[in-house]
Length: 338
Image (tube, rainbow, N blue to C red; front, side, top):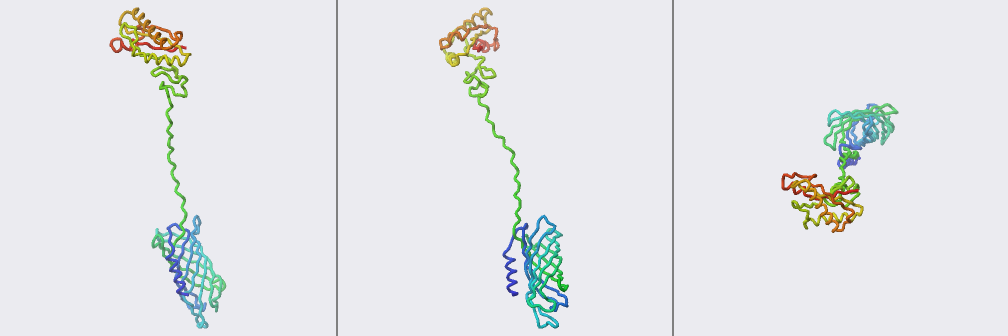
């Protein structure tokens, strides 16, 4: 019996391991017993056993202990019972409270009850209930192993006999406590790129507001994308009203726009630089406007939709003091009319 009990204790110690946070604890025990003299048993004998701890969380009680102790050898009787012997088994349940002293050392107290069984009953050594209380210390040898020593006072219920138990144990925890998953920080919301509003004809008015799509490139438009002014980019030589062939593509482009929308009408406004008299330049601008109208009519635009207007040198857009500025002022523009 002794060999079986010690083998069981050793196997339990080696087989189990766990983290520092655990639900359960198993403790192989070995120790001794001191009995009162009136029990008819030898006063001091050895026993061993096993205890199971069920750790409690969010409770005043830190652990519920269930266990047993068994004599390593039969205990001899004494006095009138010297020819008798018996084995003793004690099964117990206790409530345990821990008190931390340091990071590795703690004190614990326990209180509970149990049942003791005698292989051979004699004198007052009878199967029955007992109450017990005790105190012990626990020292963490490693993360997964602790040494425990305690002293327990047992009081037999029927006869009031007293027994003192002292035990030494190696405590091994197991059953990892499930820890709540860490709460991941919510990533900062990523702004969804907003596509730039589309302006298909490049007139500065986005498509969903543009009531006049396919605006001629370079034309000025109103807030709904409809043309208000188109520079025909015709630059005349000084004192000339003839349109060079190099400007035909621009004239044809504007004619195409006019033909696409029969509702469009325009004033063809011509301008001069400041070389010459006002009267001369006025007449010159009128001839230039007429030349542009004739070119548009030749490109297919109805004559009643376009009107020639001359402004002479009265509306310059650049300085007349430079060659470049005067060239800019010699221009023809189509101003849209309603």
